[in-house]
Each structure stands twice: as structure tokens, then as C-alpha cells.
Length: 178
Image 1 (cartoon, rainbow, N blue to C red):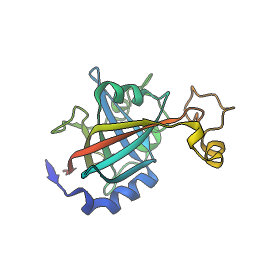
Image 2: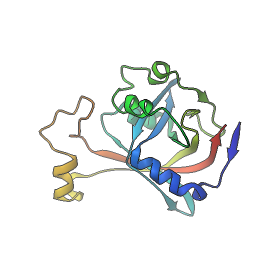
Image 3: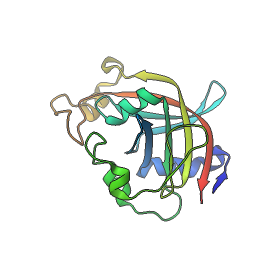
């Protein structure tokens, strides 16, 4: 069961969730993947409600987003198992089926291929309407040093050598899973 919501009525809960972590879920080639993110924005662009996610170049999720152009944002709402965010933030979809490992309950979405996740019930269904790859020379020197040190290997969890692509997702549906 889904209780439809007006997304901006829950802006405070969404923004608090981003600070501690939310799940970005994708589906492509019949594979569902979810990863923890703590960089994201809620806003309005082109007169539409937008959720923007930032995904590093070497992440499995980036491949999924490029294939499908759709995602869900799954936000803690009420009590939840915090190990979900820890696990999904440290394991790669390249090698681990995080949904299976954690026993997450996938709920089909109404308008996108990526499912909602019952365990993090505040759900935003999003369709990518714009993307933009970060450019090193456009980022302040301070932020480049802090978030993109070039002497760190970029192929393991926690790697931060590679830059992000911003995916602007139009929020096409928002609800709380019951």
C-alpha cells in the first residue's frame, strides 16, 4: 500500500535523510542496485519538482543510471535498521547483490522501473531530465583538495579520485510505503 504525498510537505524529512543517508535505487538489465548517498538536492527546475543526485564516475550505479534514466530515492521514515545504509554505502553492485544480502523488500514503482524499498518507505520516483558531468577546473581549489584528492586510488569503496555526474530527476511520484 502506498500513501501518496505532496513532496514539498516532506521536504524537512527528505533533507534530514540526505544528511544521514538515503538510498538511490536503480534498475537496468533486470538488475536492481541500491547505494547510499548523502549528497542530493530537492528543488524546482523548469517548473517541475526535482531531486538531483551526484554519482561518481566509477560507480556501478552510474552505469545503471546511464542505461535506464530512472531511479528512486528511498528515505528512512520512522524506525529502520541503520546497517542497511552502512552496507549499501560500502559494497559495490559490481560484485554484491545488496538487495538479496540484506533481504530488502522491493515494491514495484508506478512510473519508473526502479522499485521502492519498504524498509526505507518515503519514496520518490524520478526520471532523469538532465545530467551534467563535473569539471575539475570549475570546482574550487579547496573542494578539489578535500573531496577529490588525485593521489587516492579510484577503484575501491571510499575512493574519491573521480568526479561526479549530477543527474536531475523529475519527481514523477512521491509516497510512503505502508
